[in-house]
Image (cartoon, rainbow, N blue to C red):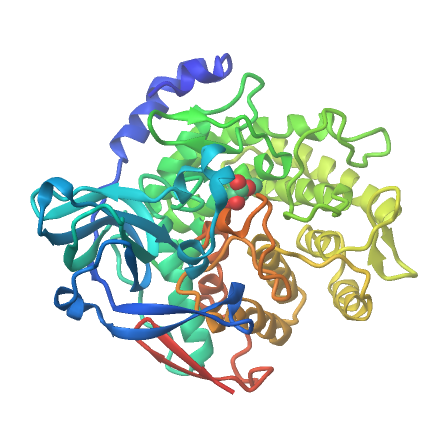
Length: 540
Ligand code: RAM
């Protein structure tokens, strides 16, 4: 492990060997089931379908052996669900020396149907490159991938190839089975829960990865939500603990935690630093200790958590308002136009409150009092300068922008009272100009804020509309970015780069399994959903 070298660590020098031992000792076993391909399918251009692609079944995948793939042709296979692991392709070759198959992988149909153009390949977007398999001994095994759809192409100059079986040997560090849902859980929420848990399971590798297709990194903001969902479903405290220690090993020179860490090929931190992630380190630690009962780890990592409060000095002006002197990357959501001042103010207050609770639990009462004082200063400043009580909404930045992000983080931080929060949500409904979220990361916090201020029926409707919308579009794992009216939205320049099994999208299970959503209301659009295994059929 070379994290220490890469970060030129000065602080916490004496703790490093101990922390490193924890990380090594907690390395999980990676195993999983065999997932057999479901069917050979025909992708169909359909303007009503998500990203313009629907599919019809040609034949069950067991019939693969009956049809050799002729040179210059291709077939598309649906595994039936998103899976992470090693793809096994078993094939017979008429002429082994001369035969090969190009394999194009996709988490969604568009990835095996849309032309990515050479541009993407040249930019080193490795995950879009077809893999070429030469199966000398009749079977080829690829390295770990994240896949639901597989296009097999036999090049024109190859001999014909007879593929007779495809399956995925799943990789995951999830070991536990989930408990079953209460009987009265409506079918749509069951479907959403199933997709959430698959999302979580597929992201559980050596660490809680953000997305197994592209980044494969441990991101602090994603970890926080994964750990919450995991606590009520696939329960793996050791993996959360390992990720906390990895973040501790990756602290930067000034003691702030890097926002992301790569596990492979060797441990190294990413350059990214996001204050609204760093300030939530203490919250992840507190939740971990509360759910696992492991307060020794909380005590061990407390100095790291507390150290993040350097940001409270660095990023706040004399009026105790957030500003960004170092041009740091402020995240909150992937929205280009979002003014983040109010949401950053609120995430800091939220982080301080978690630290305060942690300090109290650990018996650091003086520290808890100091943190409370700072939290109150920032709260007062937020109420005075960012909350317009007559207007009933939080505004952000010089332009006094109104966004869902600002409201929900202020609600979660306890800056708005319960009735102010309810009023803000009512007002948001009437404001077309209020910037809406575009990622499940922020939508999670919207749902949580609704629950917190007693709007749990609205919270349920939102879960059904948003995550249910992805299920309706055929998602078997939840996506990194989802904006119902924009199929091609991407922070990375192309929808083909988006991750379609994404850590921060797995939290509906947390709401459902903690009983936070009202169950006795009809679904908003009266959607009738039938769930069987991983296949969800929708009718209106
Ligand atoms: C992306 C990933 C990750 C997220 C960061 C901010 O690279 O989507 O999940 O946490 O951005």
